[in-house]
Image 1 (tube, rainbow, N blue to C red):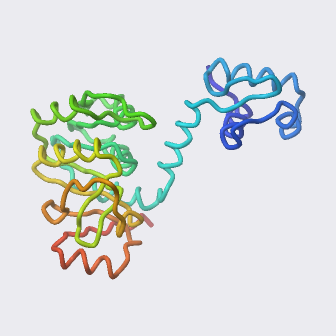
Image 2: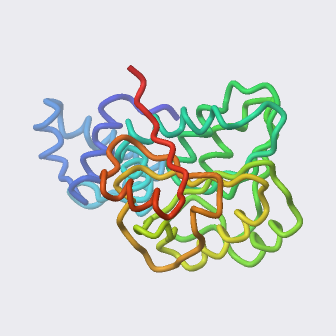
Length: 257
């Protein structure tokens, strides 16, 4: 069922506050309580909210959806610039590995018009973004669905990677320190990324400048060993110099004017 504009706004409000009463919603939208109750019934049937005696509360599903959308929107101009620059490094006919980050999702959107590619990924949003592109073959790696994120990981994912060889891989990072060490917040994902980078002929790290100078739980590589780091113009000058001293190839993506 397609939700109308008011119902979509109600969904966002309920998620934002955690709960919302019928009276508050009716006052906000200038409609009757009966109209709001009908809206909430529709939203409950769609799994968007849970009805309560006097209103509605957010479901875990809705909370998850908005959390993911918030991640996509973080530093969006920088991610778009990086994605455009990264797409220029992909040749027609190549096999491309993409991890499950939001920057690689932006890259997948840039690759939609390519005429001949094979995309290998653990990301459900990336697979969904490319599923209608008949000229692009999508190989979704098997594994367990991670709790709270729309991607796959685990021993099966790692095993599947061992049998593959890709032309190029693009991986994100939760942190990059001044020595060029790459970090991920998850040990499970970090282990998978180690195997992904080992299974590609060329490897690039795609990370907006907010990730540079940070660390996280698991170290999974040194960017100096790979083809380069694609980041945005916000990179700190001193950090840029330190990474260059570590022989990191830094590609600064400029926003489209």
